[in-house]
Image (cartoon, rainbow, N blue to C red; front, side):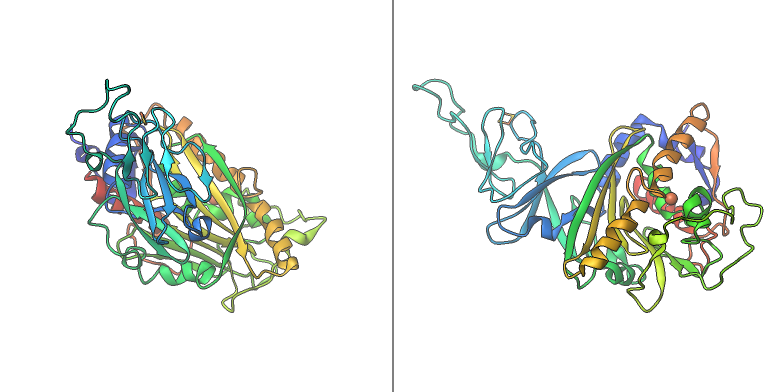
Length: 407
Ligand code: FES
Ligand SMILES: [Fe+2]
């Protein structure tokens, strides 16, 4: 049976086998992560000087991103051209002149070009490589890189459009609102393991419908309710999105009456978590910007973070959080950001639930690969809406994913 035959209902249904299928896992590595997409690699500030580098992942492919001597940014597969060992074993480094593979000491420059082979001419006149061996014939795969808003992205495809077109005119200004034109300073980072397929998290970050229902903290303390102003922008191709929540303008609303998550009797003894300073005239208190396939820029209250997530098997995902502030933050604002960052991360008052709900789905669908999830909130399309009671961005993700994967 063809994959398409198992997917009969357009974008309002997602068959569960797409989260479970081992062949699909390999297909999407080749067609999505190594296909016509921009993969987030690092912040420019992390590799500010020549010889600075970071190790990261493009899907399940290990990658090194480095600042070369001419200050350009290069990225290459973290895989020795000899027998495949990781070239860089650490997460990051500074001031490197070159990279040596630990296994047999093959040496690479900062762009991933092979520069020398140990004992190439043998030892004591014996052994060594054949006279026809050429260094330039052997190298790990090299990525094309680009930058936007102080972020570095990489792609293996010649068909990936420029990054501005890729993010799109609707979404890019909202990303710039949070990180454009400011010097960013990393103030913390985590990696957490999610017990679910990576696409469940790609759905979760686009799912503005769940935020005030799953996350009791949001609704109870009126940080994020769908009854507040806001909306959802979806890029015309469906790939990228922005969810916005505007500061509440009424003290009491009835939209949540009878919904399990909200008990208006609760309050915080210490309300410092609710002490928000509006840094933008639009009074948007939460902005979640997603970029296909696996990248998020977010601002909630005064906390800011980048998230990216990569598959580590069909039902395991590594989620990285990078917390940041602006370099010119006042000490008071920095303290406020750090305090509000307790909403995020693996044990965050809010994000804790996103860390486990994908596992609840994995367990629920374990025996039903050919049943389907239902995505009809807000209709069946992927257009932007002036409400967050919609799954339009989730449908948008699946539209792009299906086009790229070919199902
Ligand atoms: S595997 Fe890298 S030098 Fe042999
Ligand atoms: Fe969530």
